[in-house]
Length: 379
View 1 (spheres, one colour):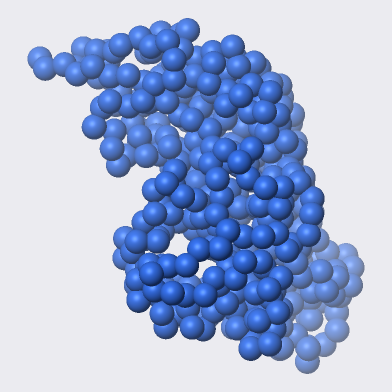
View 2 (view 1 turned 135 degrees about the horizontal axis):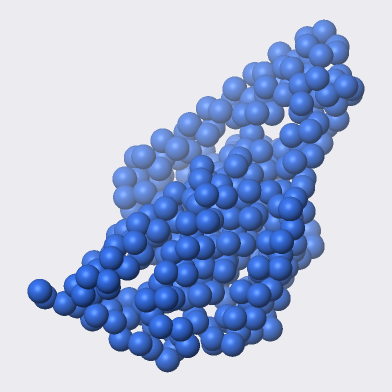
């Protein structure tokens, strides 16, 4: 039987890892890194500048949070769409803003971290669509090998915004009371849940017309506020772990971080998506426990990733981690059968097994960078 040597895939933390939002507070006019593509589209440097233009011409804002060489999906988006003329027709109808996010938290400005916190961005690339009043209403997650598919997602989001506006207009003539609350609530449902907080007047009117919360809207908004508060708390904990333990790559730092996050998980009130993120953090931390035998380490990663999936299976993170679990199941089976032999390592390692490309290996990377967790609010 042919055997292969395998070094355990390292799952390295990057910006906003596991974060559902960050914790810094500042205004929304943070400076974005200005870049110009070969297609020479005009990218604004601040959201404030973009908002002024959008208000004047009635256009929507396309705000892209992207990475550099550390983010393969960001590179894909640049190469397949943004750096090509295919984006021209859509770009002409939008006001463009871009913030470039560095992989290490310490390499980002406070303003950038504040923006990530305010709009709860944890996946890269993420594009947020704002209306001409600078209210966020939708997000476009990730990239696509098919530029037409990505452009269709933008168009579909804008169509949903038009439906929102039509419903809000209808609400103005609806009778006061529960009926008006129902119409307004159905309009707000067209907006991504985590962006509801940017519609305070609509929320206030719904609650005023449904004082007894017969629609359950107020209760749902309270759950959303609780999710944000817990997400902020988790992010502070993650940043503390990373900051105090310097990239958390040593076995000692990993062990301490596992202990810290396990204590956090003892809370009984955690929202499913927050519990999922904390479990994922523990799973990743076991990737740095190089004092453990590799077979045992892989099993621990797989164990915690599986628990993370079970905590919130319908999130994008749940989908990614499901693939990671399958990948580690396969690795464990091959180790046990002797098809794969392992080299015990003494430091953070990289995957030398090409068989991991495109499935569990990529899922592991996404788990480490927080990719795909933006739907947590919908969990």
